Amino acid sequence: MKKKILIISGGISKERLISLDTGLQVARELRKNSYNVKISEPNNNLQKIINKFNPNVIFNALHGQFGEDGYIQTILEKFKIPYTHSGVIPSAIAMDKEISKKLFIKYKINTPKFFTYSFDKKNLQLVKIINSKLKFPVVIKPLNEGSSVNVFICNRKNIFTILNSLKNYKKVMIEEFIGGREIQVAILGDRKLGAIELKPKRKFYDYQAKYNTNAKTQHIIKIDLPKKKLNEVLEIANKAHKIIKCRGVTRSDFKYLNGKFYLLEINTQPGMTKLSLVPEIAAHHGMSFIELIEWILKDASTKR
Image (cartoon, rainbow, N blue to C red):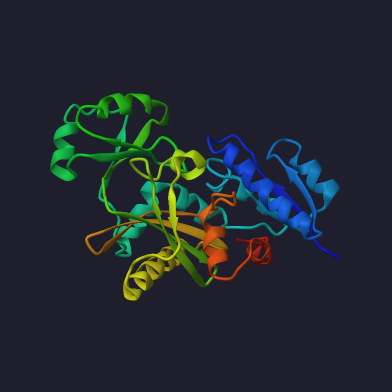
């Protein structure tokens, strides 16, 4: 008899719609393969649903804040039911761009230079600091959002306008802009699954480029890189996965410029939508969508 799988999706983050889509795609695939599946929001009814449904595994399909920052993982561990993806501390570290980048630097992983900007400490010398530390243009991003939510490329003219629009975050990251190619790498446990290159029609691989089919981002699964360089980026992603002590599947986002890879961030809960990259990489390497999902389920445990 096939296992009972509870999928948690939705949530309250800015990535809610992506999470709902991920949950729906995973549920459809599992039901096609005779699994008993239930989808739930992470709300006050979750305990009742778990008690009544009594799942064998909880598939965490949440994205963004609350879902992949260690919060829901803390709750899931109390249920003592195997759950998927990374645990409390790895999720919290990976979601916090400042902490994760400091770890990358400590372990000699190349990452764009950065500093953080606090809105409670107005810095009238900001442009001068950027000119001395980073140079324009720069990338401004929240410290704990995913899917490129509220990520902007800024110049001298628009930086304060953009910063003003992000005041609700209290603190943001100002990062060196790296041009070049967009490379994404999937890690599956101990396996360096593969990589994919993206060629967005937009300025960069932002939220619209990721999830809007009209954006027409080109996905290149056979990357034009020497084998040595491809192995290099796979190894860097694997190293980051291990440093943070991630579990299950992760996707690492890179820029490649002048022969160097720059790790932007590591995602502990990559999407499973029709436009998502990990299923596409897996398929190219002979792993079907159901095989990918079943691997994730098999990897689930009560302590991550």
